[in-house]
Image 1 (cartoon, rainbow, N blue to C red):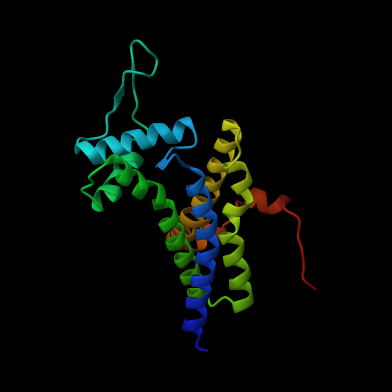
Image 2: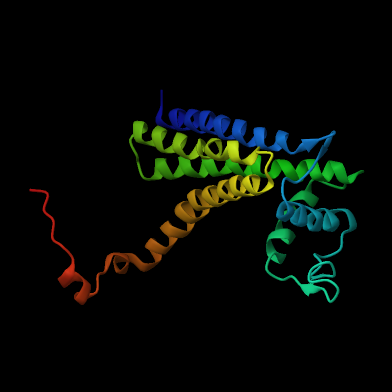
Length: 209
């Protein structure tokens, strides 16, 4: 069995674990044959994204319903909603909004598979031993399972907690630790490990001998 085959097998099995957890969350959002966002924030983003996909118009920055009756400008989620709408629209045009919603709800499942692939590629570049690579991959793939009980809770606040933690941990484990952190270490070079002289004087000294 070649190393390439072992890493490919690791990617497939790890992806299956995380996909099962992600699909369980997606199925929990299907009510009466339609996909329904599980909390107010998810509904707000889904509404904006689906409006862009179905009408072709840009993301609305002014929301008349927030801080009623004067309304409010909403700028912070513009990039996220625009990017996700572009990805969903790539699979269009859609005959009905429910079709676009189905694509939107399954995007995290696809993103999870790509995140596992990125993780496995990193292990191969680092020449990580296979047992350590397996352990790290399954620890990452099992993360959504930890929060699944919260995400399917009938209590709205608990669902928000579970979904928010899942998204935060997956982003931290994939984007931050696999892309941003290695890029910063490469950019700063030896300066990454530099310690100020005043701090070096007060830090304890350890020896492996």
